[in-house]
Image 1 (cartoon, rainbow, N blue to C red):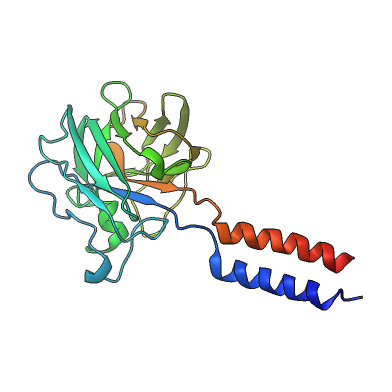
Image 2: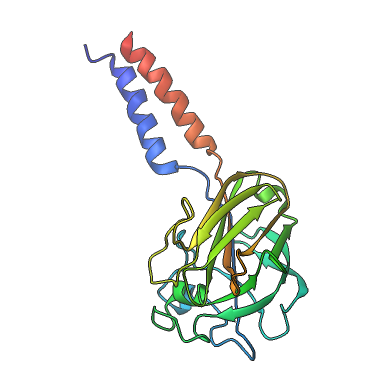
Length: 253
């Protein structure tokens, strides 16, 4: 009724392997775009790890690359290429252009406290307008570290309530309505008020995203960017799955 002792042992071993192995760790590259109308941004860095207790973004990352874009650095010009490094040592190169830069603090509309990790990341942004000069970010040299990945684009402006859109590789477009970050991230669905868009199942060693405000909306832009590799099952997981299958067969016998 309960199978042979050998079948029970195989099932127990398989469960233990699964419990202790899991999937291989995902590679992640996180980028924080700083910004301000002019002068040096007040919040240059999302500072975590050993020096702080917080993490930023919906994926809880504590390792962010800063792209310093303020004053004339991103004003109707191309900036970069800039090398960025991921959580597991993977590398990529980022080049971007924008209509300008801005920040919620500079506009006096920041809600979350200063030095809040996600609040700092969602403060400054590069901005664009679809009818004149959209912002564009090109990421290259992802190489073999990201065979399949997800792109998290953190969006917003200095006022909230503006209509915007973002496009991946000239084909996949998502519409959204901007909001001032209030401490809770909201994914864009159906054009509603949101803080971020996710493109899933992306492949290739490079991609281009672009966006900005629609209907003449200014200062609608990109706060941050995360490239999150989709982890492949580890060899231990595959072994455990095989053991489970064999154990179940033996149990049924």
